[in-house]
View 1 (cartoon, rainbow, N blue to C red):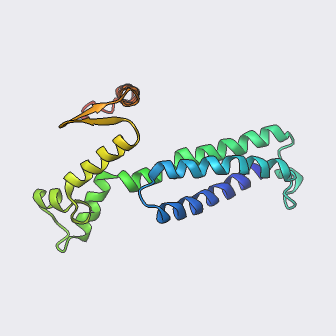
View 2: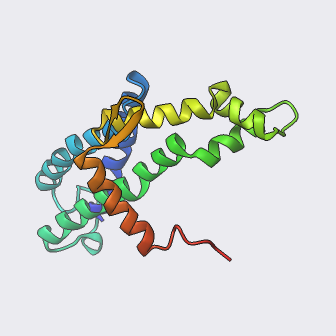
View 3: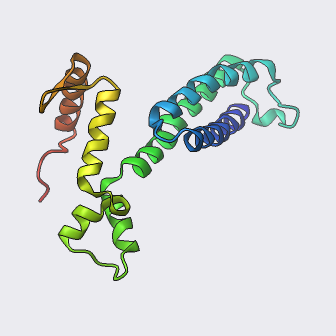
Length: 179
């Protein structure tokens, strides 16, 4: 139970600090959340190692008798909570293309939009071209692409990432048409 409680506390701290950082410096994105995650990881380890198995409140029946197992379980929960929860939620909220279109239609006066209105009104009037520009800027800023005249080129890192995810998409059959 100690592992669960400490991982939960670290997750709440991650959400609070990450949200504060993203509001303080917009545009930091997933990299900001990853930095907060990495800063809190050793803090979690130290807190786990310095606190008793009972945390001063847990009965023996809720304690894991092997400290190393409890520690590894705590780290597992924290890592899984970040990569499987917090980061996925952020990516959905930040990069949810379809979700943004649904929100735009919801906020339209008639709760309906033509295709042209969706294209120009995307993300509170910034438009689909803005969204693509934002994505390209992000890929360039993270070293995945570089501009060469009017062309966008993959860097070595970009080729690696594209190959890995192309294989994952193929393995998961994401690109196949559904019947």
